[in-house]
Amino acid sequence: MICGFDYGTSNCAIGVKPQDVVQLLAVDGDHAFMPSALYALGRELICEQVGLAMTTGPLRDEFIATRRGPLQLAQRARRELDLGSAAEDIEAVMLVGQRAFDQYFSDPEEGYFVKSPKSYLGASGLRPEFVHFFEDIVTAMMQTVKQRAELSLGQPLTRTVIGRPVNFQGVNAEHSNHQALAILSRAAQRSGFSEVEFLYEPIAAGLSFERTLADNQTVLVVDIGGGTSDCAMVRMGPDHRDREDRSADFLGHTGERIGGNDLDIALAGKQLMPLFGMHASLKSGKPMPTKTFLDAVCTNDVSALSRFSSLETTLQLQQLQRDCLQPELISRLLRLQANKQNQQLVRCAENAKIVLSDAESTRVALDFVEAGLGTEMVKTGLEAAIQRPLQRITELMAEAVAQAGVQPDRVFITGGSARSPLIRQAVARTLGDIPLLDGDHFGSVVSGLTEWAQRIYR
Image (cartoon, rainbow, N blue to C red):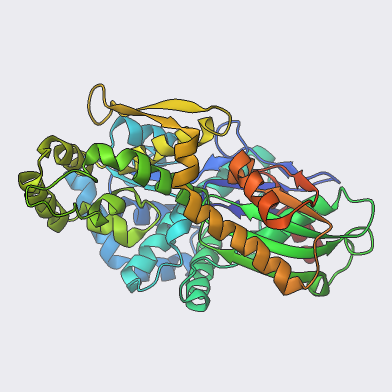
């Protein structure tokens, strides 16, 4: 059967259209959206689980031939962890979705946890073994989502359209896009899809919205997701929606790897890292170096995560602890590093961001780091913290309009982060008095992908 697959930075979803209405399938318990997260007892075991889930044949043979080293390490990891046969229940060694989050929060210092792996797919300078590793993470997640969707549907899914941002990275975009799409393509094939196509996510969101239009309009679609922000100027309406070739209707599009995760990271850096010594005084009178503190919260940057977890950083922090007039603050950062709790810290910032969308203040508790540790956040602090990434998002909107050479008749805004009043206010400041409409903030993209899949595969 044909499906649309939203492999998102924050959530994954699959849609089908058996009749005239798009149906989202259950992929995380009873839920249609699965958080984009994976937890494994050991990172080597991810590769093993991918191979076990693949159907016997040339594709699996090729995979095993390119993964001999990691598969041997997986066998050793099984012995060290005193695990049983590799053919046993997959959830004994690997979890995805909400259960991955739950396991990480309950025991962060054990196992391997990754959130929003889509953020890393276009990273520059990845060695082949790291490309293979990200392929395995994405494949493991796709396999699980597809299997759960097929169980819910009661029949196999064979052809799909997968959403993609305009650009996976802002730097060296062409190479980044090629690398990321190659990873997603291989993952989809190894998950059992016989045909795979891609569609820009803002265009997919626009296709979903277009079904509601009674007349022709030029629409600026703004999709602010967890990892990227994408904008597209599109001619829409009754005279356009049934065309086989829509290329002439797409007047301009922009996108960059900046989204909800960047807002969370900015808030964590500004509001939470001072509790760990970022602005503490040194005995020498020199300013505290901030790079390591920012690395700690930059959870969508694989290089920053590697630096923060390295032995070199541990030694640097130990020296800073000796040089700091408040060494207990640096002790907290060392504890955060040792216990692998930086993802938890950024999740706290994300929760605070959501609360501050409606409230003037909120208490952020960090008891998982230290009993009684926490801080009060206020809405003005959120506004100051996210000013820079928010400005870049509004610049992307203006660039899309400039490319098109016409003003939009209305703005259609979607994506999880688009719910924030601060985002909506920024859109209004940038584009003026143009009607602003909301879509299904989580479901617009997957609905549009499903519509497009039905169109191109029929």
